[in-house]
Image (cartoon, rainbow, N blue to C red; front, side):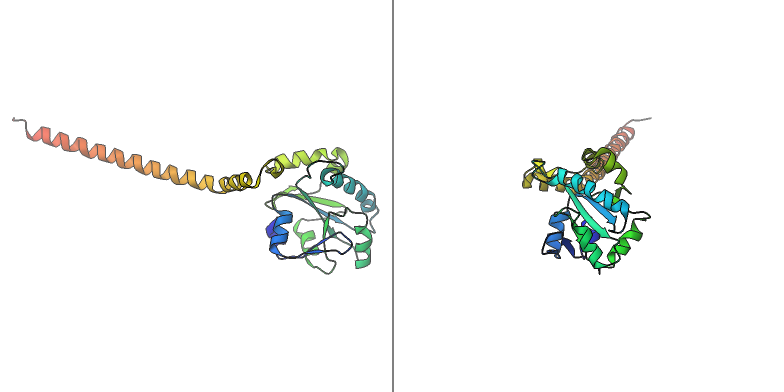
Length: 218
């Protein structure tokens, strides 16, 4: 997910609309998190009805007033609005913790095509590796509410950093990337060692057989 937005400017839905425009900021905000791409617009009645439900859903999972530990979840509004004023109007319906792309950013339309958005509202759920977990989770959110996050977390095999200290997380991340390579390396080396030992034993048996054969008179 980080790679998808690493060269982009993400804006916070606060009064100053602060920018996340450095690689470090974007990585810190998006890494090891499930991302909700919310495609919508203020002129859509369905979006107007869905927005408060999505906001409530997101707040129940990330707001300290509802939970002790914030879910590893990011909400990013992808505006399909026709004007910047419409975008600003709709942002008022969304949580302060959500992010959005600027109206003038053409990447909004690229994402629309990339994820084959054909109706509004659409909520595309992405795993941390940018693969699609759900192409449109609107009905799931309306039906299950915050309970669907646990399903996403399990499906994404997300490491819950809330229960781990930094050192543990780094070690786990390191193992998850390097263990398969190490295991393959050791397997190959072990097979080579066994093959060499077998060849040596075969050569030794041949030598012993030759010595025995030469010493017997016929």
